[in-house]
Structures are given as C-alpha cells and as structure tokens.
Image (cartoon, rainbow, N blue to C red; front, side, top):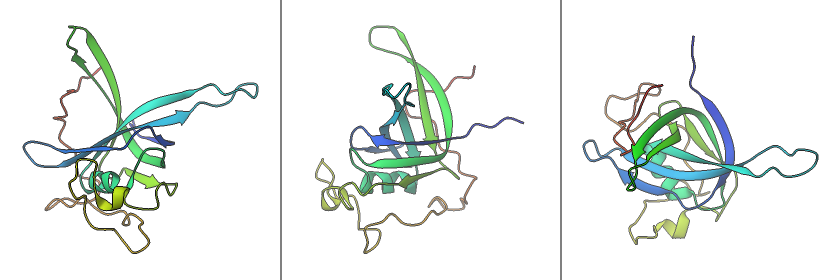
Length: 166
C-alpha cells in the first residue's frame, strides 16, 4: 500500500492568489506558508517555504479569509512534483502541496478578524459575502460541483507547471 498525504502548520508569507481554470472554471488558490524547522541546541534553524494549491470552494474560502501572516493547518494534502523550463532555458523542479477532495485548510489564527479588506480583494473585485456572523469559514463540505461528493474530486492539473512521474 502506498499513501501520498501530509499535514503542515505554518504562516502565510503573502496574501493568497485566486484564479480559475480555463476549461472548467474551477477555483484555484495559491499561497506559500513558512514552516519553522525544529530548534537545535536551543537555536532557530530557519524555516521552509512551501507552496500550497487549493481547489474548488475551499480555494474561494482561502482567498476570502486568509491574509499574510495568518497561521493555517494544511490537512491531508497531496504532494505533487512537477517541472517546467524557465525563460533562460533551465529546467526548474517544483513541489506543491495540493488540497482537494478530503484535504482541507484550517484557519488557526485570527489574522485581521475576518474577510480581507472587508470582502474587497486587492484588485477591487468583491470576494463574496461573510461566511457567518462570527466571520469564521464555513464547516467542511463536499466540493460544490454537480454530482461531486467528498473524496471523489480529482482537480484538473492545468496550472501551467505540468506533472511528471518519477
């Protein structure tokens, strides 16, 4: 049996970026978290910066409620490696932690106390209505795609990085 699943806790290094896939209009939210390395002999050992990719309704919630500095737990993410050729012709290898299906992002610290910029994104577009009166994200739920249920959503991989198998 093999398993591709991990849990991470860290702080956002910048505000999330939301986009939609061209063919299916599935929401895709990308952000990076800083995860502290364990201390050695009482001294900090720095941090690792990990790229997170979230799909579906969870992506829209992340865009609406997360901001730079907020602590999150990425639960049941899938590790996805890929590669692309940069402008200089060099092959660049990537590692993303993908949240879809049964994966989730739990908001641990309060950040700005709710919606970023009062529901207004940096580009001036509305991000949506508040999830509840207490400004907490809605409870975990199946993706809001017709016919989809929790655990059977496999997001499209057209994020421009491609996939490769080792």
